[in-house]
Length: 210
Image 1 (cartoon, one colour):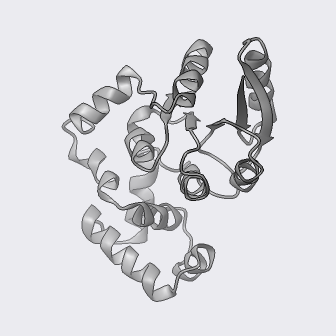
Image 2 (image 1 turned 90 degrees about the vertical axis):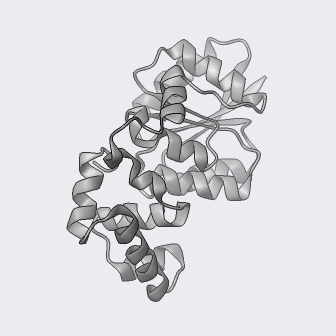
């Protein structure tokens, strides 16, 4: 029996997935969470074998939640189920430790197949994600800019793009203001952008924030 945890801030989505998983003889939903903090609690309590997690959550981004979960339990399979297209996040999250990435428009049967795959310690790579990994997101250089960032830089980038101040980011990430400012400078240099407004525009255009 595979114990599944569902992480999504929409109760109706959790209910739908729970109902579908209950129809599978080898799956049992043993935990639900509506945000990253609750997801980390599930991991701490050792209540699940696989996490099925959305990216958009109220308290922190899916990227932050994934990093926190993998820091606590490096062996925990985390399957990302997101409304964002694969091209926006898949390769970044796989690099950060996700075991697979599925778009919410996929067939429900594929979610079950992915859960069974990642439970065995393997990654679940869809043909679309495999193509991205092989092609480096195609020939559009703009799509590669945020892929060049380290995990910390990506975290800071997403916070800046949402309009947060350097001081607020420093408090939230337990870093000094000077350190966050250094990350900001590196991000600007790597992405060839000049202002926070440019970061926000890039993130919105690329579908990284809503």
